[in-house]
Image (tube, rainbow, N blue to C red; front, side):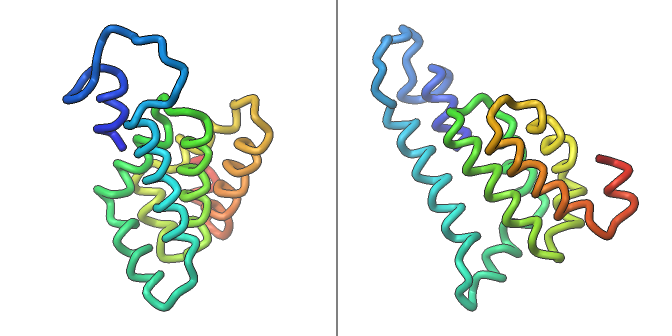
Length: 141
């Protein structure tokens, strides 16, 4: 996702800095949206291997990358999908500590300032799940 964003901004291979002015989504934007869809679908899945996938996503380096993308200047639909992914992770008690260590709380708090009601609600639910039952996380929020 980071590579696609850099290419779209003209900072990497395949990117152009001429600002083409095309209103059609770039290939990078389409791939970025598809990757966000795929990640969200995998995390939502309730199949028996779902916990293994969640455990892999909850590794600190992966969470740092995911949270960096959540706050990146992406199309609103992609940001909302990534935020929803974080919200789904907050439903897993094993993910709460890694999410806190990765800095999820400040990122989620920033989403509360968005004008879009659905985005604010998603962030609020994620914060609720993350902070529920933990005084330390409540104070951090």
